[in-house]
Length: 158
Image 1 (tube, rainbow, N blue to C red):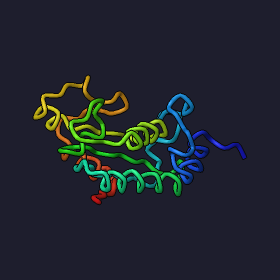
Image 2: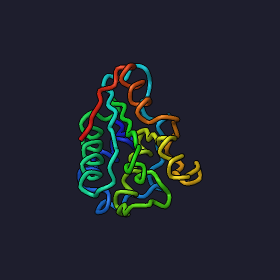
Image 3: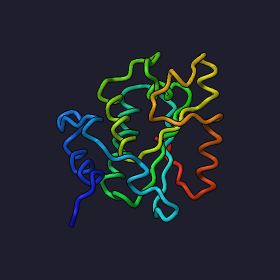
Image 4: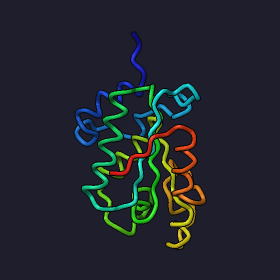
């Protein structure tokens, strides 16, 4: 059985991205090459509205665990707003560890959608140039969560 790049990543995720040495250049899969079709059985949207290290670790670890367990049969979204938007910033206003910055980019390479709240960006005087390329900017972060729930996504707030 051929192992997909995403499945290879998921096995490495168990070791931890830092010790696995996985870089974005090595991660060639893009979400359009993975699984996101209307037939995805499991759908989760994670709220990310805080910037403290333990909280971000919980969100990213949980997201990675769900990827490892469900592989290509899960559609994951991290919706960042308020202080949590710093996770998706090129130059965060709050301390975001390099490990978390690398992990969020790696998760995006394996199909996790990242949503950045336009309202929060506006309040911080940020433009799309301030947000990592892997993220999609949506006008209202909470509205994005609501619309995903209306599409059958389960809402996770840690």
